[in-house]
Length: 407
Ligand code: ARG
Image 1 (cartoon, helix red, strand yellow):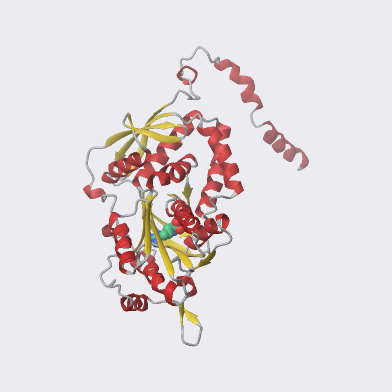
Image 2 (tube, helix red, strand yellow):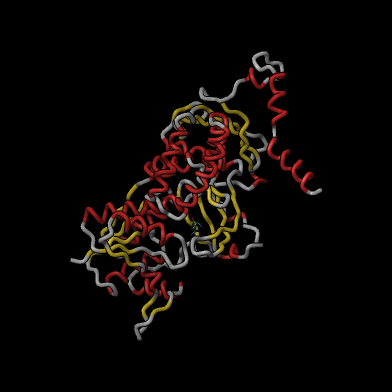
């Protein structure tokens, strides 16, 4: 019996893949896997309902806790950012693929299928993980391949063709709510694109946001939140130790209420296409700001400078979905060695769309109030004189040489 594991979101594209797998690709056992990384509950239920309607063997895998500790926390440690927003879709894809791999191994699958088209980043991120872990299993991307025409050639599916095809196979998808915008959501962030947002000068309408209030609707009084860190990862909120998943959900809610975490950017996709993206990621914005502030307190100047470059490289590798790349592991070895000292608390003020760090403390602070304060006795300021005289010596030499040689 030929078995295929379909990475299943429950959306139109992946639903169309189910009958396609049977009719066109000749699989008699279609296994659907939906991975819960914090997308809306109704999306998961829709996937379950549609899988049942289309008669697949279905698995929903709750990967939320694993997503936070093994994907979001490494992103916090690396200040995980791409072109100015906290990466979210890109860190969930490897985990979604990993769960598909686990199912495929367990049931002995012959192939994978996924609903990625040929335009986006997801095809790279998902296939990389599948190919790394199970190189022997074939991968099929029906939406990328396109609809087969009678003469054997192929062309991209149109939305109405997909709806028609689904209908002919017993699935009525007429009233899906996700038609205007293309949304990808996990507990670390929401990404909204498509529709009129494809016009870079079209201001995002209020309706695309779900997690964050518009500034006009935010409280007039600021709120203070205290984030506790251990080993570079958040462990407590306002003094209360929390499970990682609960902590992210709480910070999302608190920061979202104050309108924190909306990002509107032009993003360079892996294929070189520029795309207009809107994100809302209230929790990620707060936790990353807090983490950076704590690193600034406990790391040496040289460490901070070097780590900025390491973080940037890590962010690009993660964006490209190269989750198991040896360079990524090497960068993490450096990042983690610094994180041992990223312990302490950071106070963040949430107000009218901004998250401002207003306090930080750590047993590892490389900071002494005594040394920095103006009336210090431990630091003899007269001793600075010699150092000041030598400051910029090579540059001064250059200028004096210029003067001599020009004559
Ligand atoms: N550009 C983002 C990334 O590549 C998000 C892509 C998915 N977003 C969406 N709205 N379908 O990580």
